[in-house]
Image (cartoon, rainbow, N blue to C red):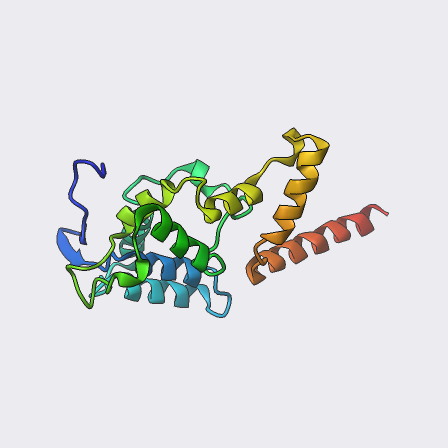
Length: 199
């Protein structure tokens, strides 16, 4: 998929059948929020995600989810590099005001002015357009500066810089999700178990 020459899709093909989808940017922001919500079981998340994306959910759930994820990646193929778990630089839940302000400041785009695909198909922001604009945000925006603080490599800084960035990392630190907390607790229990075994 090339954003410069290809028409932005509003449907996907599954087993030679075309399925209309909801390509609005809010669909995939809600999708990300849903994936991070520990109040739902995994199978519930899948069904809710498919309901967000498809007007009619295909019978082949595996293929339907595969197409949803392809759409989520902006039409790009899956890469192992993308699967590497790193500390998040942003959160649609906690950075919503910063992201809104960044789009307004840099592009003069009021994200609240879009009606959404289902309510008005002539006045919505396609997810792939949103992704491109998101990637193009520059450091004149407070949001990009905040992401810079969160992702800064402290080991390559002078003592004075390190102190400043450590402080800013704490100021703008994102809350740890319940899922990450559980994973860390399980890891600690395993490590403590190994220590007892070796004692």
